[in-house]
Amino acid sequence: MSEALSPTGTSRGVAVAGDRATAVVDGGRTRGVAAPGAASGGSGEAPAPTGRGTGTSPADHGATTRPRRAVRRRRLGPGRPVPLGRLLGPALILAAWWAASAAGVLDPRILSGPASVVTTAADLVADGRLQGNVLVSLQRAGLGLLFGVVAGVALAVAAGLSRTGEYLVDGPLQIKRAIPSLAMLPLLILWLGIGEDMKVTVIALGVAVNMYINTYASLTSIDSRHVELAEVLRLSRGRFVRKVVIPGSLPGFFVGLRLGVTSSWLGLIVVEQINATSGIGYMMFQAQQYAQSDVIIVGLVAYGVFGFASDALVRAIERRALSWRRTLAG
Image (cartoon, rainbow, N blue to C red; front, side):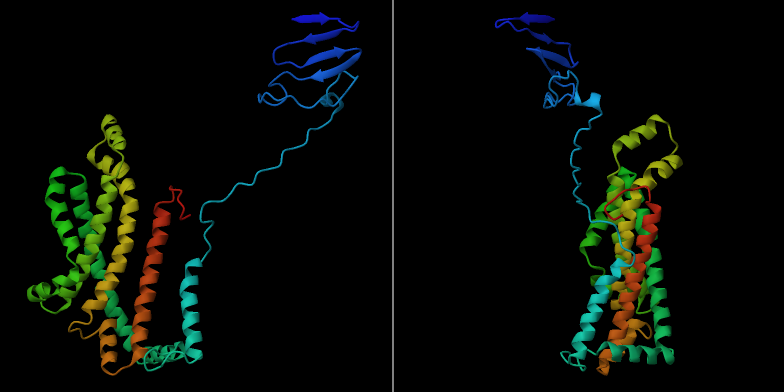
């Protein structure tokens, strides 16, 4: 479509060609005009004219447009993990303890300083007391953790994959969760005595409840569409468990395992102070009788080191087993 107008003796030509650039001739002067959406990527804005009397656009002369300023993306996540970064908190606590002891703020009769604790630990290692008690404690905690994990996972699978199992298992386990394991000590002592069976049972009960709650919650939160897809594909029960149930329940399983490891150490501290003849708790109880705060702190440090190390081990296994997930944990 073209139109010629000459009200003053001059001619003006306007050409409209869809998305193509047009030329406007006004009194012998030619201006380049871009059609809406042609030069600005569909934004509807025409670039400012840069040439007069040439009939050409800046692109014809090899001119370059000014690049837009890059917008820096704002980071909202926690950032990349730092190797051994979790040791920063314990290191700060140790530094504060050391500084308070060196400044004389702490009374050594109430809380011994780090240097005294290190010396006492070396003496306990030299006469073999620390190693023997640590081995006994590790055996109790390990057995309680093993039995608790097996029992908790088995009950969670029974309740999570069957309505009958849910009705039979979930109610008693929820009631048990409301009853602390330590509150059952009198009854367990009456049933099992004060030997190793009672100690391992107390630890296992605390671990089993944590394993059941988290694994069961993870099982019941599996998307029902995955189950429907498995039914459409006619997967067998075994393949359904391997392909759907296990991957879907692993996140909750590892959360329960971390809590179970912590629970095993908490239960161990208590049971080793009830008519025990060996273990870290027994060593601490004996030190209490003689007001040996340095020996008590050695026992607490041993509990803390084993708890921190076991949790770090579970974290490492979890990262490897769930490497297909992309989470904030990194």
